[in-house]
Image (spheres, helix red, strand yellow):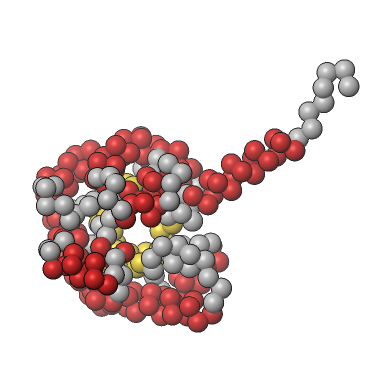
Length: 256
């Protein structure tokens, strides 16, 4: 059976995921924006401190998690944050592990180059993973390509995330094949570098059970982490359908 993990931004969606039998919960800034009814892409603009957002949301998620491990998204790039102390703080709070979210992989071109040159690049996310491994914590380390997958696997991270970007459904056969090929290559690299690491796929065209099943079969990955696919879409569709059912229900007036 494949692993199913859920990115959650509040206690309510975490409780729903736990009730459904989820294997792992992840609380990070994009999920917190989602749970507030905002576009998760807001996390990639400089409006809030992602670490403070996660600190504020974790208690309600830990309260409903039960035996399901919770990992926390950590913004590893802010040099004002003492990273070792932050990881220790999270571990003391009951968190089982960390994940490198927000991540610089969402940026490209000149901005990504500038971040790397400024020392605010992927190396900071690898440092976070190593700190977690040293503390015998879980670490879900996201990678966006084969090179990053190899580097993240080499840290000893318990989970390596194979990232396809922001979730966007696709029926284009060529695009689907390219995504499957990339996932399979990243998965192979992780297996070569760290056979004990579990691999989770996420994002891109992975928007429903069928697309996830096909990608898992094509890539050989161990499981799937759903963000908007397991939080935004089900919540909006479920509540919308419930409201419509009440609107359509004809209640007889007394005496009629």
